[in-house]
Image 1 (cartoon, helix red, strand yellow):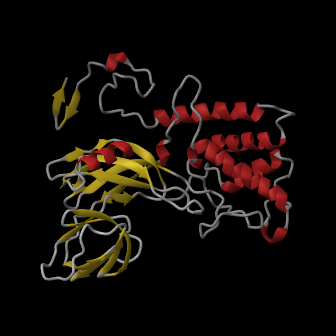
Image 2 (cartoon, rainbow, N blue to C red):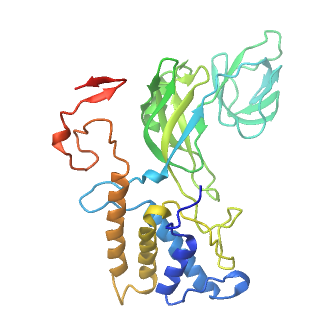
Length: 355
């Protein structure tokens, strides 16, 4: 399906920012032509900051929370794993564990999982081979040989969420054969308290919490999130959820790499929301440009225009996503007025009217 001809492209935004900053409308950046490197860098900064300001707006006057754009709504399914029990423990020595008949997954994907051997629970810190792993501390007693073919279980306690996960929207549920069952959403502290009371309880998931994934302090990939569930899943469950999508930097080339001040402008790129909210996106970028170059000559002029456009865009987004056919929303949570003459109209389903 072709993009609407009314959509605002990245090139449109850049031309407006350049003209406002006094650089003209020439966008031939490739090969060092056109604007200087410093000027191109300023334009890129204004566009990217303006997009971030639009996608995560401050609350409107007299409102306590920011608007969540409907076009930034995504969905995903997290598939849990049953405890891994293939094979048995051959020997243990300190923190080193050797398996027999095991097919442990090497690399980082199983690091952080928990292994239970007899009554000991230990965190896996490394997996060198399909039969060799290391845990965070020694077992209470070493297992000298495989005479007893000691059983074990490996549990996954957390599951990675999509890289563009920006926050949960609504509930988390799974299908149990009869219908969708919701999980109780809580926080990481409560989840760890539940686990401390019974670390090895297994069963159907009842609670879930979104937690920050541990990352190195010098990472270039940014913060990521994970889903923690409890009890430890005893089987495979498909947990469905909606979430707020974090958009990438729009000034990127065909390979997804961020555009620098020496790169050509990706003229065909369309920012998310550009079809309906293009003028608001431009106004947001110009408000940022105003902060950089014009705040003393025309203080707040572009910012006021952006707030006017933002209010209009938010109202449009709300109106476009009202549940027109699901009855009366008596709590007015959609902030819309209601035609009370419709209150007594029946709702029909399968040719049956419900008053």
